[in-house]
Length: 111
View 1 (tube, rainbow, N blue to C red):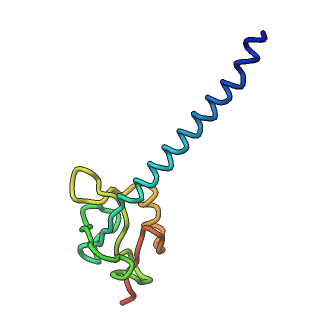
View 2: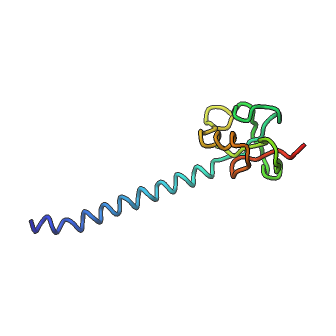
View 3: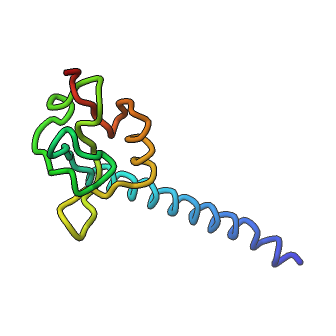
């Protein structure tokens, strides 16, 4: 019994180290995801903004290119990895469908 009691602090230390390591890894993955997001603009402003094939990569400040209050103009999203199109996640799709500007969705100027 005394041996078991002596092992409790060591097990707590190992558990704490494990939780710390997993937390650090999750933060690193989140930072990597943010760094890989790219700017995409609609090829034609009348295109469906929920269709990834309607976007092209934009090199520049997308907030300056779009900066409006109307329909979707551009998005920030990672490349899908197989084609030169954005990977539109379900969360990003919900932001696009909401019709308001967010950190990842940029709107066109009013006509």
